[in-house]
Length: 375
Image (cartoon, one colour):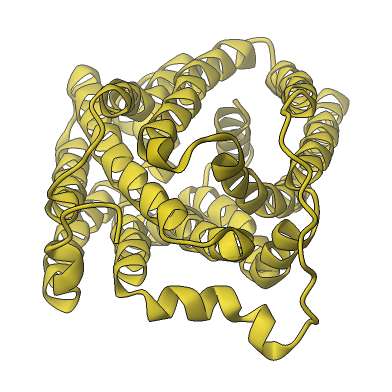
């Protein structure tokens, strides 16, 4: 909901595709600066309490966005500042939430559990943008205020999570411990290959950042249409994630990962060329379905192949890879669209994604040959 409201309000204020890309940059910078700190926090303190605190902070930020919209003092600067604070809260929450999973799920069920978690998130991605577009008809303040209430509800639900109390060892802070998550991933070629593949592939394929441009200037639809476009990837992702939860991937993990990234790139190209609203929805749905296959594989590998004492730091680095691909990819798309136009930017991004997948198959043959999640 916040994504739709912020993007549409910002594009109405400035009419700049570059500003849409700068939203991604505003989310990316805090994540980079905080990566090493958030991993240490997730491995040293109660992960459930971290999640609760972050939801409260996000609710306060949504309230500030609502007040700014209702008071008429919202500017591009205040929007960027609040989005940066939101990204900082999310940077702390992501590794803590991810590291909680093995504390409540048996190791043998992690892969299907990750698929169910992704399906829950994709359901929100379907309902949220569509509802955000509808609420925006009453003004951006309505969308922001509703999002704030839902953040409070999320925090209350996190309170209900029950896990065994664990006393986490607090290693002395040294250069080695601070960078231990990075070192762990670098020493595991399969993890490094999977995370870096997502980083560079989605970096080129950030077409969703330009959806307001397509909705308004190419497909000639309004905020409701933008909400549907934003929801379309989640529709495809939800269908596939439920399928993967029922029928978990057990063989040919590596090949499936590479094929999913290539399909993601091809769907991006189709979307870039489309001038039909229906075809655009289909292309985005296929894009979302392919992306979720890659996501479930990467998340499952990271959870299964990482010891609990390291899970927060590894999850933080993984979040950095994911956030870089999404937020910096949005920035790249905005810059490319400003220089080349929206359609050429999306086309080049899709082709670049396919090229990255082909290159990574050569650079990480052990990932290509990977058969199972377990070592």
